[in-house]
Image (cartoon, rainbow, N blue to C red):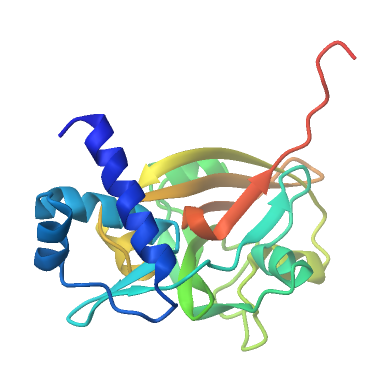
Length: 238
């Protein structure tokens, strides 16, 4: 299929979704593909894009439903803040799903990021964050055991490792992050209730203390339609 017909399909789908009130069920995939004159594979690809934008939601065995305009969590990247802090500032109801706290042995990538030996004991904290009754982010933090013990996080943990370390008084200074677009792996897709291969925004970051020690290596996956990040930059030479 050429690029133009796919754009036309997106336009037609967008118009259909826009006309329907939130909660409406879209026609079945075979019927929708027939009505729009496209193959089911092409339709499925277009539907995936609208799902990551938060406009529709597919429920296994039930169908595809219109969500409407999703709540947007917006913030600048100049200052490191937790997702919960950003959400509270904009008045959105965001909270963590079930939190998994596990003892792990550092693989090569994690060991290099945390400046520890491969196989060193670390703590892995993973959880989804939900907005508008659906998971919109999947967060994974990995910390050396001398920074955080698995039994240290209590029922008072609100889902943010950053906020927990700050409240504890750790001398945190900077975070360095790589920001990329990525395709959801099977594990991440399951946590976010999306399809494997859907496009996500990924932050891979290292959190430093004043002494230069890396205390947290994290991977954060965001559904693009629910987040709007920006950065203010100075013009070069000024």
